[in-house]
Length: 71
Image 1 (cartoon, rainbow, N blue to C red):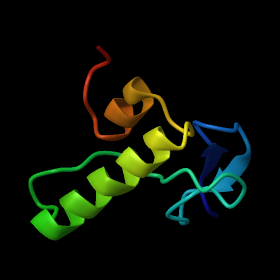
Image 2 (cartoon, helix red, strand yellow):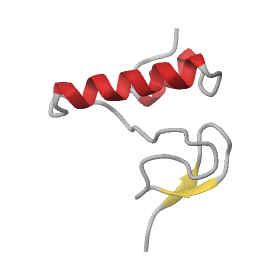
Image 3 (cartoon, rainbow, N blue to C red):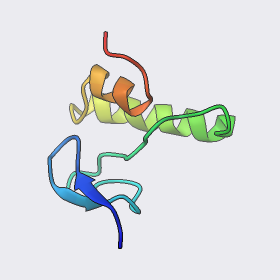
């Protein structure tokens, strides 16, 4: 059985096997860790920046997705 939860952006129920919400395209990034390759880290940060510029994510939501505390 797949685990499901709600999208942090739109609240829609989603499958955690997906990399982003099928409704609002919010990326699902639990935390970027030391084992994540640098190219992937940069791609994740660029995607979060695009989402913030489009008004889909707030700065604190993006920080939470990266495992950082709010400011």
